[in-house]
Image 1: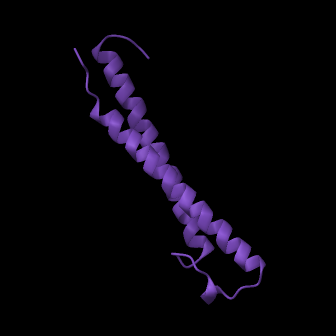
Image 2: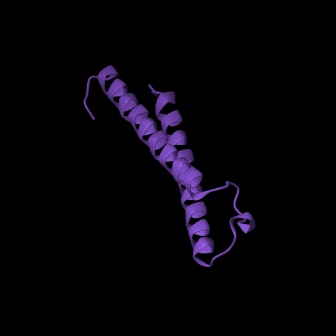
Length: 88
């Protein structure tokens, strides 16, 4: 019998998306920090978002999303374990 586990898959997909969002936010912070170091005017920054603060907040949000998705995966594993009467 095949046991399908959609919550696990959703958690995994969410975790992957959180990782991509975190990488993007970190790239933006690094790019802005480098350009600021080179004394480029803020209006000349070629970044989607306006400030380092916004990118840092996005990085924090991506981290929290990843933690939430990890909890979904953990809960899914526990639920499947209890259904088949084992602990993983």
